[in-house]
Length: 548
Image (tube, rainbow, N blue to C red; front, top):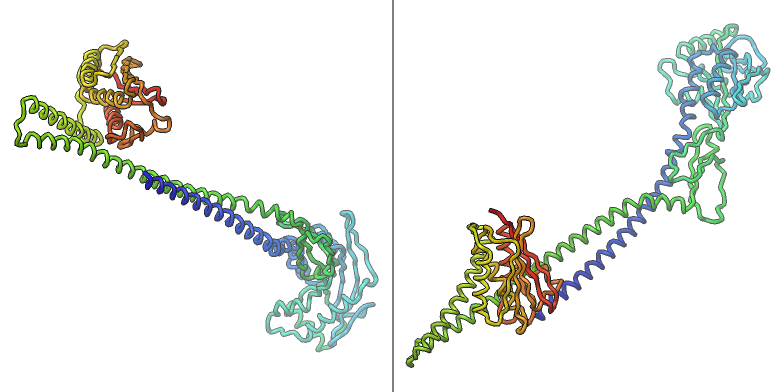
């Protein structure tokens, strides 16, 4: 069968190519996915710093947007006591505030040690108070003059200009209010309470009437901040090994070049400082590996799935090739099985039809030949027909009581006449009769006995049939001393059209005998197994239910 071997060789090469391609694809997929994961981690390293910044300056934003504007709610009526209480709440909630300076200012009125006059309006400083905290304790002190008068003078000038030139017919914009009532400088914020439109109208009227004797309270505060007292909230420990607050000009020299660094500047009063992020390459590599693991597992599963699909395709192709081979052998052998008796019948018929006179002996001889060959054809057709009926479940079991001894001895006697050189023995132990279909059981006996004779060496044609009863079942053991069956072929001998290649199979076998036995035994709710060794013999064990 050189053609068949060539087909299998091509399939094997195709499998190698497929596995190589799958392996290359798997490695490339892992390489690409790892690189993409690494790039993604590096991109996150550069982008997630904004989230860390937002969480770190969240208290500062709350302080700037909510706590400082509370001063406006007092409408200028803060005094040293209430200012101290307010400062205490600031120190308690916002640890980055070091000191608070409270300016008790007056608009209009009498002159004071510190005062400015613009646009016919005087703004003077009545008193200055300094508040601070140390080790959780709040302290306060009155100052005759503030340490930095420029804050008061600058805010007073902006306030005077706002009173003189603001549009009181509309609400001031946020930008106008910010420019007038806020002064944000590095590490320092100065704020004065926002005037209402009616207050501005009153102050403007004082300017026009030059009524300097009347005064109105105005509160102003300066907050001194320390960015190093901010609590850094590293919300992405998986990306940033170290996060610190550094001056904007901070630029370390990484001699090893083994670190990734990035930075982001603080806003507002902390604009001279930045958040500085650094991570070693190995630190990010660990995060890359952690994120890559599920991706790698997914790639592996997909690869295994593709390999499984490839294996299933190959298995189906292999089964189809074997089935094709079986069918091819079946057609050849079946043709041979038909051709031989047909040829013999044709020859015998031609001799009978010839012009020459035949003796009585010759006529009987040709008749015997015709009868035997017709029986062979009939037996082959009956076997095929019965096999088809069994597969289609179109046969009914007709159970009847049979005597085991009589049944077996009848078949042994028949085969001894048919094959005089065949040594047949049987032994019955513990069973006398049982109910079954004698025709179906007879077919099993006939096929197994025929096989034992056919596949035995010429001088070792022996068969022992042992019949026992075991746990409500009848066990028939057919033990011969034949050529045996290879271990790797024993699971295939019951397949339809399957033939083991050997010298005993060269002259006609369609591979239906044992398959037919298997179907018969299954149809009778039994089972058949084989135990065999090369050149030592085979044992076919048929187990049938013993039902009444």
